[in-house]
Image (cartoon, rainbow, N blue to C red; front, side, top):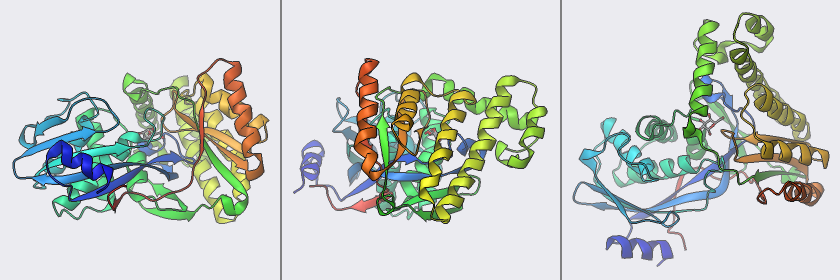
Length: 384
Ligand code: GLA
């Protein structure tokens, strides 16, 4: 029996009926565009949250995490209410609440989680937890949820139960990415294309640099950016900033009075354009040339959206100066991770330069690993 299955048995007194996994993600380009109905381009990381699950014949949901110290948390399925839980358990509880609210009848369940997705690193550990839960509950209860359903329900859990007003980037990445591809997603209607992304075949590497600076979106800065974007769309009389064509950006900016809102609009419209540039380059087999587009994206997030931090800027500046093709922060911002595109043979030089620059500033050492585009959410054999 796998250790996860043995632990499940030990915790809940019954063997799991199966195991399900959902990954974290890095976003190649398209940041803070999702809640503006725009474009994103994530890839799933090889890091997953795995859940073993079994049904119960009462209406209790019991959840336990290997990675977060604390006892098993229990909820009666019929008494779930938004904001009732503050801990990690709010994510699986929120998913159960949303599924029931959507009219699905759930059996009680015991869920045991193991995760190697770094937390607070801007790599979507929350989405991995939500989507793994949604897929496990879908299979246990025969709901037949599609990747779109998994993502939408998971996003709603985070918005309405946990209280974080995120877009759908992270949940769609976790639910719908496939190995060897980046996902080109239109967040307005969830139409998408899987774009082959084999950096090794190009002699390149995409690195993730986790600055270890813990981001905290819930502090209100994320919600504030979202509100500023909505104010921008209202000022320009469009449903969402995605509806401002890049060719009309200057005219649109001239119509926005508030300088802060103007900068937010500029970021979103140029970022959607950068997604299109990256797609065109990848479609043309010019992977190397996306580097400068990534770096331009970082400058926009730093100067116009104002969500970078000293550590992220140091990664980008140092990596680029040491020969990287391009770099940018990835995810929500205010800390977390950056991505760096390098020639394969420059991987070590660039990594060492970033690590040395962090040491010189007396920052906590960064964690650097390769972003290998991996599978989205799926049923797995019980982990060994
Ligand atoms: C966080 C949110 C996403 C998205 C990104 C920024 O990861 O959860 O919905 O807005 O930030 O692109």
